[in-house]
Image (spheres, rainbow, N blue to C red):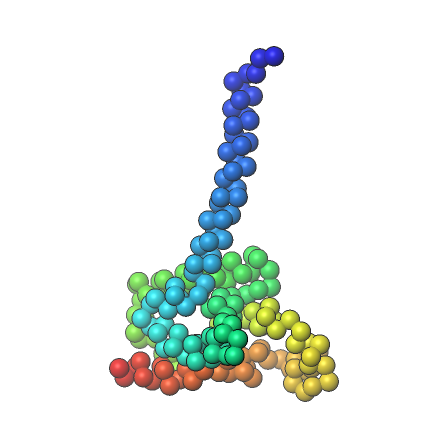
Amino acid sequence: MRVSKKSIYIIVGIIVVALLIPLAWVGVETGIEMTSGTEFCGSCHVMKPMVEAYHQSVHGGNNPYGVAAKCTDCHTSHTNAFSYLLSKTKSGSIDIWVNTLGNPEGLDWQANLERRNEYVYDSGCLQCHKNLQQIAAGHGAHEKYFAGVIDAKCVDCHQGVGHEGLNKYLMANKYH
């Protein structure tokens, strides 16, 4: 039985595609992982106060277990994979733009604190705090939040979460 060149090309093509898809996925996944934590996010000078405050917080590993959230655990949407990638791409693009072509030193981080609910996603909070709804049953504000009675986001009530004493670090950095 003789195999035609066309058949060989098709078989080789299928093998190449079958190998490239997982390699591409590993590359994308590695890139996402490498750009998700404080080493990457804190590499810009203007993020130094946020990183310092993060390390002082429970979410930054300052807890009995040493467990720490990554920046993207809170600052990207976890509704689905598409919204995660979209919010990560949007945030990263804005950061790159501001740090390369904008005026990062001119950012008013104190004013941005008032808009914290634009930068923190409830879906991120609930990704880690999966049992909160069951635990909150019969307990005040969390029960009202899950019932939809309260029109607020997690960071509206938990203002310092993730960056303990952030304003102190912002002020120190501003006048340093």
